[in-house]
Length: 191
Image (tube, rainbow, N blue to C red):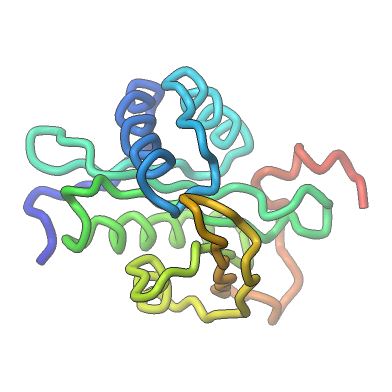
């Protein structure tokens, strides 16, 4: 059941504390992130600034009374120029807000904004755990599993797999791009 009053908006630097809290909890207690030391609020603000400076979306979800529920963003998939129309998504939801439509709202808006920006493919790299809510969400949003990289991360005392998922955006590969993609400045023309 979707949360009442749920809105998705652009994240702002004032959200860095809430973002750091949600992400830090996952870093320290979960397996969705392969980082092992939670970054500070300052570091999360710097990461957000880097993404938004590229013209890529960084979104926040709020509930009633401005309660911060989660965030998502799109980042360049790889740094080589040929990848400039492909992005990788990231999404984290507050533990108390999971299963209430927050992820679907964030991912839906992220997909729409990336399509509007001229991106053609969206990738998701998800820690492979049985019954993954993230894999299920991505499947519902039109992603398909491309494969599994087995035992590529070691976290919380276990080897972890990563599920690679992909979704076509806009015209996908059916036509050449009609404009520059966001984030193009990072590529510097290198092949």
